[in-house]
Image (tube, rainbow, N blue to C red):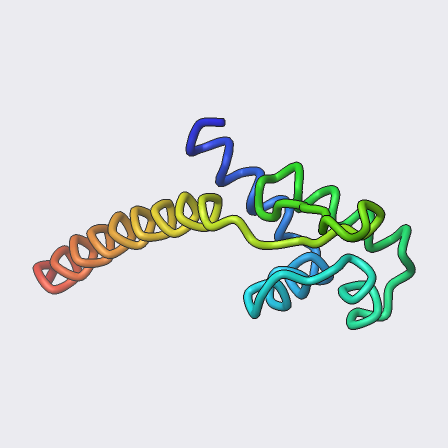
Length: 110
């Protein structure tokens, strides 16, 4: 997936407040899907839909512990956030340049 598509996918996945909460929880470390659902007060099917969206966007990855293949452990993947951070930095740079130019124009105008 190219960088622009990755940013679009990341922003779309993060548009939902529950998915942002999942990302916040996973920032503290990998967790089982059931634990995430309990912490957010969501039913397992609802949590599954949110995790599928996060997985498809590339924000999280799923693994299965050797002791029980039915358990799914989710962890954050850093790459999508790196693309988002680069995009935000570039946007900030462009806006800063525009604001500096606007300020110079305003100060020059009598």
